[in-house]
Length: 244
Image (cartoon, rainbow, N blue to C red; front, side):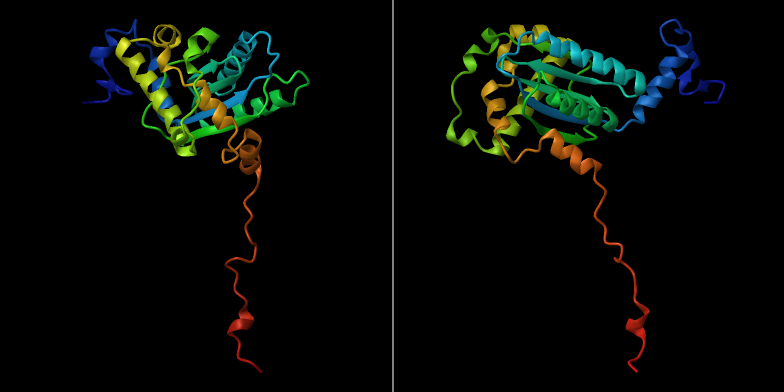
């Protein structure tokens, strides 16, 4: 196919539908393919006197808006679930976006009103095969939705690997449910099928795990230069001279 027939991968046939497909769509789609996707799952405890939990959702909506302006090609998808006592945040985007979200979280922890308390990074994956969500959204979970989640963990459910896998499994089931039901946002799906919600008892247990890094610990490692010995790889010529 010649260049005149295929401009930027768009055939003449597709240009007949130029009202639905623009050049911006073509270029934007190609740019997005060049972004290395990463996924972050982070949890944080809320203070006992948290008044309006929708303020957290509004805060992250505004944060995403600001990040979209700064990193215009880095499409943000994910889900923020705000429980009565903690939150679960899944972010899918570029590394710059994920780091910005973690930095914002640490700033919130240091504020006088302390909107968020201790936090843990549950999982971070580099270049996953696909996204779990089509858009970013948040949902405030009522106590009634998680009322059946009060039973404690069994002994074999309390180890680290099982806890993390239970979170990943629940999110995968939610993503598959959204795909099957052709829904872009999970809010109504969680209302209708609350068993898709990640159990609160699992998140509470993970927040107590010292094995998981806090956002501060992760950022400290991220910002620290590598400790490389400057003498590594250097050769002392005297080692090759005969003893006199």
